[in-house]
Image (tube, rainbow, N blue to C red; front, side):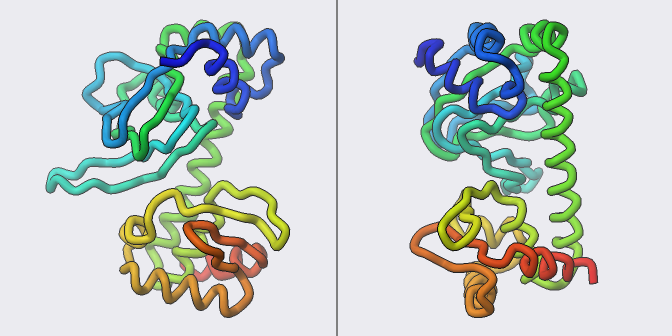
Length: 232
């Protein structure tokens, strides 16, 4: 278990709480219940009776649909500062998907009842939740368009554009949140095709491929143009 000092850090880094002043963030942190989970452990499921919002403090969490066939379809992978469960809070429903610890994780859990009281006092929290949902919807629409097209390069470009980025010396640096074989499965292609298309984008000077999962986006405008090829 962690203490509320960890909760403060957790709250401060989350976009939906970032608009609050330090005193308000401290109040919000007082409602956070730190939870540790080992890799592979379920954090949220559609059958959960308890309804809660989770803030990832350490580690990675994947949000998935479990198919009737037993296969898992990964929808997104979340890292520190991301939240899961806000859609079920806004809609007043149980979670639609599963949240599973991709690595050992520490999360801050907020019961929906406590969160409703906080939103009543600080409506800006609700506004920012809706902004997060709007951003996810825009990303989902772009990915659906990409997946509906025949051009694998367009799918890859759309996927890279929607990854969180930080500024680097040579461009925006993104990191694949899962192994390339899992990214390939998510994009409806093979690991070999994924590697070939990434190398082609690198040869064209659009991206760079340093070691590991890091990718440097050198020409985001051209990558955006390539992503648009999904609907063409």
